[in-house]
Image 1 (cartoon, rainbow, N blue to C red):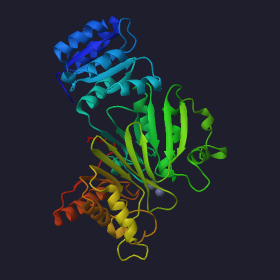
Image 2: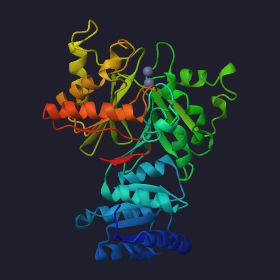
Image 3: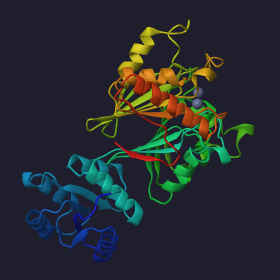
Length: 407
Ligand SMILES: [Zn+2]
Ligand SMILES: [Zn+2]
């Protein structure tokens, strides 16, 4: 966490500025408050702080204009500009980004999220959080407390722009609870595919029911069934007491094809995976870094009749050189012998993929519900052993529920 920054708070409302000042000083930063924007412009050029929190609506010169002028000064290239406004309109957010703002925080200011956001903006790093690392079925109980028992859900937060959420397994419940403490939610929910362990906690994602939130739910269509169809189908008739009509936030559904997309300045590549039905793998690229989310996926053994050298080459290219590969490592090699064709991978094939694709860090994911914590430890040891035998540069991690990493 960044400490001891010099931060300017520019806001014509002194009470609000003082609130931000208290939060920032509490976190160990030095704060200068300025209630007149023209004067602030001169002072910032003279003092060269590291961060400016800028209100939008100010009487003498509005925040957009201050931002534009600050960005004209090459001596302030390192300055991080964060717009802080009670207005949550998309248009204002876009305008702020166009004028060179590094972030946009919606008021009212909340202590915890303000510091998180400023840290992310200053460090300019992606933050990945694991909310559920299991596959197929939640695995509660004393022997699964270390890795956690929830199914697939991972978030990626960028210094600016909406939150990215991969899959809506049971882990998304706690994510929703966490987001409810942070104010307005703007999120892209990227679904790998509509098997239960990836969508069945969507109805328990509380931000969907809050007016003002904006949530895009995206994934691959399944024949004539689009994302909207399969998300609503699991809440219809006898399956759930309410339907998607109860979502009070602004929810958009979008069918994604395999290919390249751009979402909020993040390049998103997708690829169809080796799994029953249409299942998408994702590669997010931002600021020279990348992350791949590839589950559920079966890497057939080279001597299998289902093995495809073409698919393997395509997948290696897709994940090649990525900073983080989060991927289906459901089985041990021994377990896999009776699970061929179920759509999931075993440890040796995952290690092989990561090594050949020169992945930087491999994250073992989507663990079988029959495995306890010790079994996951054993899979981690097996992958690490293989990578060591091959003198591989790949780092292996078995993330636990709640783990946060920065890329
Ligand atoms: Zn699954
Ligand atoms: Zn599946």
